[in-house]
Image 1 (cartoon, rainbow, N blue to C red):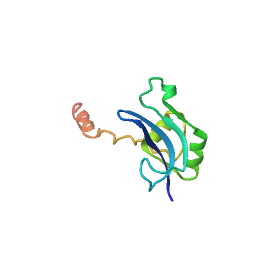
Image 2 (spheres, one colour; image 1 turned 90 degrees about the vertical axis):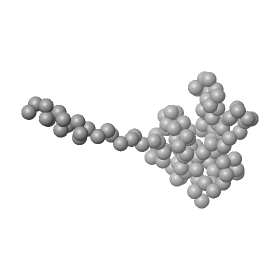
Image 3 (cartoon, one colour; image 1 turned 60 degrees about the horizontal axis):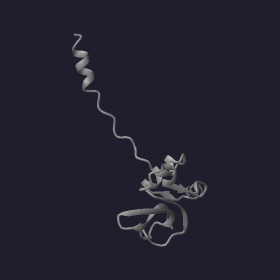
Length: 109
């Protein structure tokens, strides 16, 4: 059984609120959960009240091999959690500067 840390949508139409849960990866988005770890309210203006999680429990689950979703990873990163299991976006390929280098060498000659 693979465990994931992901958000479960609750709340009414056009007013989403999410719960942060540890779930079996095979269960549906709003299905059965193993443990509730916190909540996320994207409509909240106050950043301190927007995301609330039990960070120590999140770290415990990641130590056991739970894989957080990309959204959960970014939320945990904003809270200051550092862990090897966080899935953060990788920086893109650097721009190719090799084409500019020959042009710079041609000018002095």
